[in-house]
Amino acid sequence: MDYTKRIRALREDNDYKQREIATLLNVGQRTYADYEHGKTRIPIDSMIKLAKFYNIDMNYICGVSNIKNQFPKQ
Image (tube, rainbow, N blue to C red):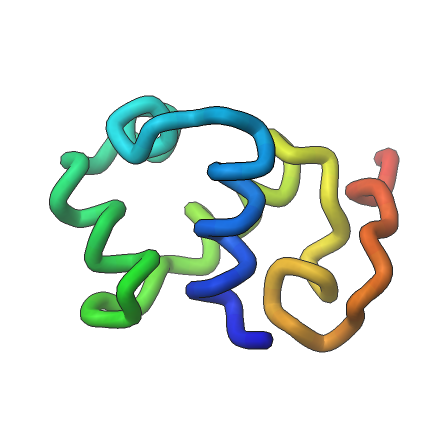
């Protein structure tokens, strides 16, 4: 599964609207929708914000792993 499906699934599983996540990332709702549809590549700093927000390992979001490990503690 690629990251576009993962970020959409995470958002929907947590009952967030696109505009809420767009606000978190400081982008417009249309831009965030483009991330989910693969029309625009999501910047790495936004991907990290999502991983921290959902407390999910980047490997899961990127599709490298199917295991939902927590975001690493610092």
